[in-house]
Image 1 (tube, rainbow, N blue to C red):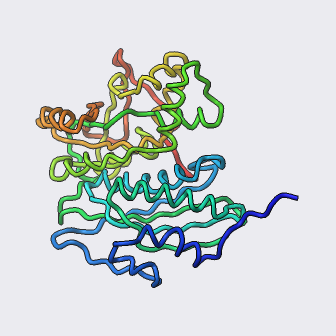
Image 2 (cartoon, rainbow, N blue to C red):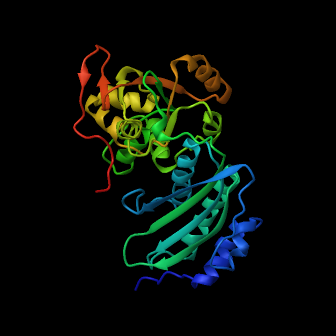
Image 3 (cartoon, rainbow, N blue to C red):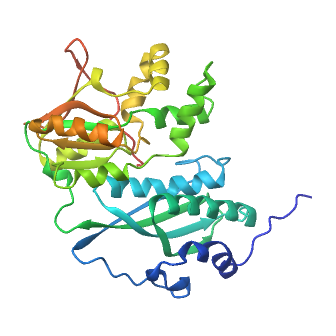
Length: 330
């Protein structure tokens, strides 16, 4: 007979695993109250973002709990980064199946602790519940941005150039690796893509530099085309992407060399968590200087113009279309 998972009661779990994550955070009130009490820094505005990650949708059942924790937190921190906000606090709602035991929770808490130290953020509250369904984690992150400085999706202007940080498509291809749908002879490439899927890299430092500089910005979570489409819709403009300029990692380039049909997956699959932003054409040298300063790849991939929607042009100047626009839950 299989051994029943050992799991402590709700308040024991909070005291043992999560209260230490709130230590030193004044708004948390020691996690002894049902609320948090927040006093924003004078001259700032609060930026609030919530995202849920669900087993078998955003991560796989066998993924290490430390990485599940870090991805759950990072996908939210990434949104704050794109808005130039400094992450400060977060709330966690953990909806746990009965099979989740104390060992899993302890490892999960260690993952949160590691990223709290990296991003300077603290747990200030949340909730726990049990479920017969899949493991579900909802995190709400709160950050601060100087008053009136947050870049909006609606701020792009005709003639603005479009940039993206890092590389595109690694997360979507990493999911194919994780599910056994993409095989590699080069284990380094496979490991790189898997890591990009499991552990996004929020560009917090970049976000701070975009304040008062970028006309529009967001993070690429639903796919490059879909997320640029959000800027187009909010700004009431069109955009053109030059496909030859889309930045690829060596691993993604190796995949497309063998399987060119996966280009659509690269452009629409999501899970990139890079920052997509627009700036005036006169700012090109400033972007180059910023890339050098941060030692971060910032690639000009197209421009904004009148019209609607996102157009694609290949290296030969021909217009391309994609069967799908990006990730959607419904």
